[in-house]
Amino acid sequence: MARTDADGYASKGSQRQLQDFVNKTPSELNQLIFGAIASLPRSAGLRWVSPLKDEGYREHSDAEFLNAVRQTALSFELQRFWPSGGPSWDALAIVNTGGPSGVLLVEAKAHPDELESSCGAKDQSSIRKIKAALDFTKSWLGVDESSDWLTQYYQSANRLAHLYFLREIAKVPAWLANVYFVDDGSHIPTRRVEWDERIAKAEKCLGLAGVSVPYTGKVFLSAKKIATPAACQ
Image 1 (cartoon, rainbow, N blue to C red):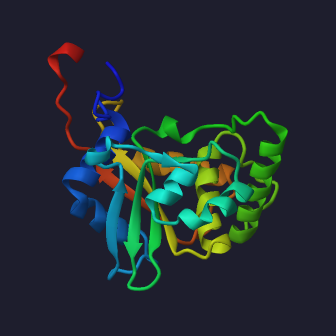
Image 2 (cartoon, helix red, strand yellow; image 1 turned 135 degrees about the horizontal axis):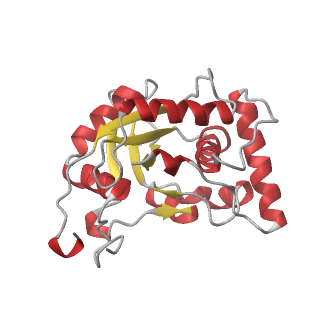
């Protein structure tokens, strides 16, 4: 079965789950995000800008992600910080704080194995830029510089690096929500205790065990049941 249909609607997994929450029940998602990220003002408003049904459920990366959250002026700074081919964000929202608009970054997973990834960059100048960005982020978080952020849990590391970019370089109010779907029937269902164990393992590997990572939160969502079309059974 194809991962998405002609309209970009996903057939299963975290992609489908997040599409449904953003487009069908955003208030439920918003409530859990506010509950998970203590520093996100409760008076703030979230305006979801991806993945939207009317835009083919597009996910954004690089300058396109900045355009989506109305931060186009930062494109040059992002190019200096990170090479092209950066994170493709599972969801994005503009945060209305009553002052300068902020950004909510969302990374979603439906199965613990999705936590693991390694840096695939080949160009040496890109690798140097990535390493420098990760080292700046480690320093910001007080993480031992010897911690390996390029292999095994690279995706988690580069998401934190982009939070650092927005917060510390661009001076934009920004937050990162890590969304974990519990009991997603399109995979071997993952219980909450299994998520806790695998997340703890990842944090230990990244040198983040016991570190209070600012402006982030873990959001655990009960996966919605997805009807399986007869042709895909």
